[in-house]
Length: 187
Image 1: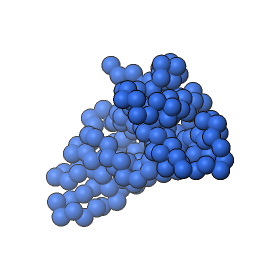
Image 2 (image 1 turned 45 degrees about the horizontal axis):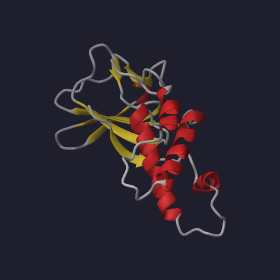
Image 3 (image 1 turned 90 degrees about the vertical axis):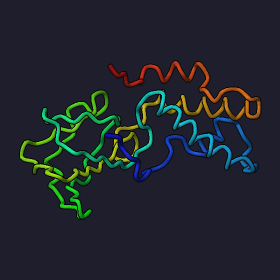
Image 4 (image 1 turned 90 degrees about the horizontal axis):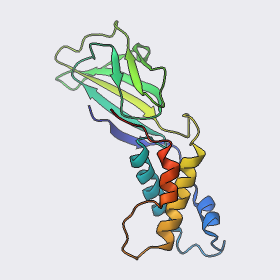
């Protein structure tokens, strides 16, 4: 099961105006705004990859061919925010809606994201289960942790100052230290 990002929700955790202030750029010179916006997006994606946590809310889709026997479905998206739609997709591609209350977010959506599947959920039988959910900090989810927002700012500043120098697109070590405490570990 691989989550498919369907739609980004909300805004980037660091705004263009905030980043321009952090970089100490003149208010009149907006020639580099497009590049700074692209750097913010790239830095956010890099921090999300490093932490295995989403710092911008998004809507995702999952497809299952069987319900988990344990009634616990681990989901590789942290933090989980809401189950927005559940259905069964038949061979004719018709979706039969299921009550979203039959799938609940587990007790720790930040460190152990999972869905709890009610045993009353209809059997899948030659169909596929379609689950749509939202995940990520900001928006309706928990606030973006301050160290992760600061890591994004530091990464953008480093990439902005060293653009064209041919270095690897890694966050600076100080940003890496901020990110380390929020990294979701896997066993």
